[in-house]
Length: 594
Image (cartoon, rainbow, N blue to C red; front, side):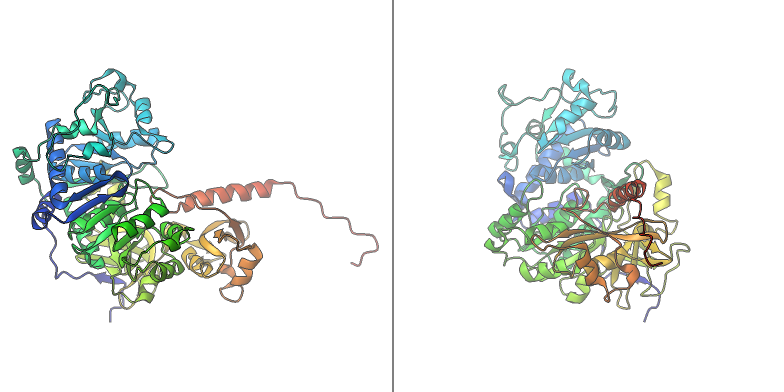
């Protein structure tokens, strides 16, 4: 029996040594009539043959517009059919797709576009309060005076083309080769920008240049850049290859036992690996159907889509599943078609996992762990993983990968059962951070190990459990406390809907625990009730000193909890409390007992 925390995935199923375009073409030829995409909110429903034709048409349009293989094209949009089209078209044409976070504002957008030198950007006009085209005009006022495709902007020197998404009706004939909507004068215009439908109309699915370009592509070529949501410094552009994300999508789908009969509901954002790899590529490598319930997350839209489309799979971060389970209309929907999916993106609370299995029929739901820099998944449970392992671990290492739990100081594997930093190595490790070899070397060591920054343990069977981030570990009076352990315990309280635990500065102990709790409506939960629940059940030093009841947590659009913002807020609050004038104690009466 192994004693070191080191595990290697099986290698009996070979890696896919093809580009994304070649692999998708083969799948479309194998099952042309099968459903490939249903974008519910757009009314788009395409077969594999239709999606393949539409993607080739867009790839041809990009090349004819003058975008060369190897150049970067950004997409700044929430979920929709156009997102998937661009993902496949850029891969077919050898162009690198750059995912732009829809939450970005002008300074972040300017940094991202210039960091990787995007020559073109596809953007949705607006979403809720976000005016994307307005932000672009703010950065590039030159759009008002240039012809579409001829931008010369002082602040965005590489950018030449902005194409805006002009509505799902423009996609009506994209997959059939029919004529698209004509460029009529009464159609909406955006000065200096192309309509996406006009760009698409320039393409031809039978363009001979497509196959010529594809012949010159290799699996190791970069195909995608995703910016990490770093908590310090500027975001880093993790550069991923065809080989990286195609294989990762395939083996993720294998863990879920996906097949042509499956229909996967994908409410997680496509700009993140969760949507585009664990969702899109897991489906496309197994002939499954992709279902987008909406452009942004709406728990009701998810429940409606699962029922209407008879989805067999559902993805989400824990907060999404909580929102679905607690929706007041949850009981109205027939979710019996569900069997599998993935809960990931942030630590998966055991109690939430149990509710998902019992109430949403997701008996074969899996847990996945990873990071953008590893394409992203390193470990995942399987549909037949025992429930106790599924709710307490992130599964085992995927095929053709290695993971180890290492001493952060020495890099040597620690004994099984002992916490250390999780490292991963293999085909999934990124090509590197775009234009930043120094930060790449900091993340990936000379032996090819990606240092994740996550604290984990490995048991005797190779199951990996994430116990926190190295930077999140709390040291209270010399005791190492892992917030994940406290969170899991507090989830057992019937009045706790969601909880996050952080460390805050303390003059006596160095750090103290603070719990932010979202109480269940009507529970009447109090601080004393929480502490009484802990006493006698967990060690005294693990009982949170500070408890705050909140409506939610600061998080990224992918559902990652931003604990650093919680710590900042608590530091400010506690600092303010310490500066507040303290009332003088009442004077003791002269006849008081000593």
